[in-house]
Structures are given as structure tokens and as C-alpha cells.
Image 1 (cartoon, rainbow, N blue to C red):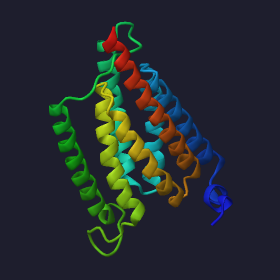
Image 2 (image 1 turned 90 degrees about the vertical axis):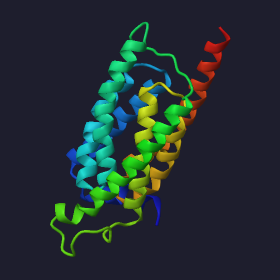
Image 3 (image 1 turned 90 degrees about the horizontal axis):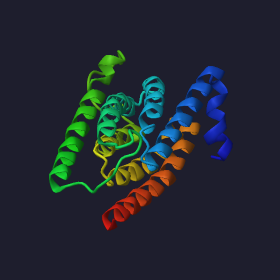
Image 4 (image 1 turned 45 degrees about the vertical axis):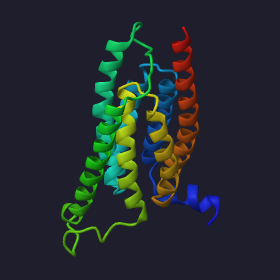
Length: 219
């Protein structure tokens, strides 16, 4: 399979509005990651626009896990926006730290709960879609299973970000990298490229936040 088949051919059956919508979601998503690297509160308003767009897109493509995580992103973005505003001296930028052992325990619980929840939703998906064959996980392909795993990873990453913890970038790096082949498989070439950009930006974000913490500690 060549590049044309992977990134162009799927869009031959899309409307201009669908392509524009996905492109807009990718642009605002990229802006959100950029502002996050800069520890700038604009990470949240730009992120909210992107997540709301992807709620619609991912639901239509049957990626319920990623769809739900974007609903969660929207809620957590409001929470993070409020939290960052309170913890910011200039109401724009924030200080960052490493997570505590207690927070890692909470993160582990959040991962397990989200994993179980998404599996449960996929279990009932045949009923939601009025499919024959009854309830179960028989309808899942490898992309759906990756979707379940990445959903849990991203939930933890989003929570760590709202708490201004440096570790959030580790989860974004892992999840973004995994999402690239999944989105290509689902025919979302623009989004797969976005996740490649996200992976690179997440690495830069981790290095930037880590450097910022060291500089703050020296002062």
C-alpha cells in the first residue's frame, strides 16, 4: 500500500465539509499542544474547540473510546482552565512539578477504571448500533483494542496535565505514537499526521517542562 492509498484515497468519498472539519480539529489540537509546551493557559480554549470537533468525528467513525476521551478532555479542559487560572500569577503561565507517589497511585486507579469502562461500552456497542449477534466484544478489530488502551493512557495524561505534572508528557508520547497507525487504518490520514506532530511536540514538551522545573529549583 502506497502513500496515496493511505492518506489520499480515503478522502475521495469525503465531502469538503468533512475534510475541513477534520483539518480544523487538527489545527486547533496542534495549537493546544503548542500552548501546553509554553505552559500557557490558552492550551485549554484551543483544546476545547479541537476536542468538540473530534467528539463528532470519532463517534461517526466508530472509535467510541477516543470519542469518550474527547468528551472527557472537554470536561477536564474546563477543570484545568480553572485550576491553572488559580495557580498562575499572571493568569497565563504556571509552574510545573513532578508527581507524588500518591498521585501515581491515583493515576493507576484512573487507568484501570477507564480501561474497564471503555471495554464495557464496546461490549454494549452492538446493542447501541442495533447489530445482530448480541452483546460482546466479537466486533472489535485491532484498532478498537488500541483505542481502548490509548483512551486509558490519555485519560491519565490529561489528569496529570491539569495537575501541572511533568509526567503528563510521557503518557502523551506513548499514546500519540500508538494512535498514528490506528488513525491510518480508520481512514483519518490528516489525524494520523497530526499524531505524528503531537509525538514530536510531546517530546519537546517533556524536555521543556523538565528544564523549566530545574531552572525554578535553582532559583
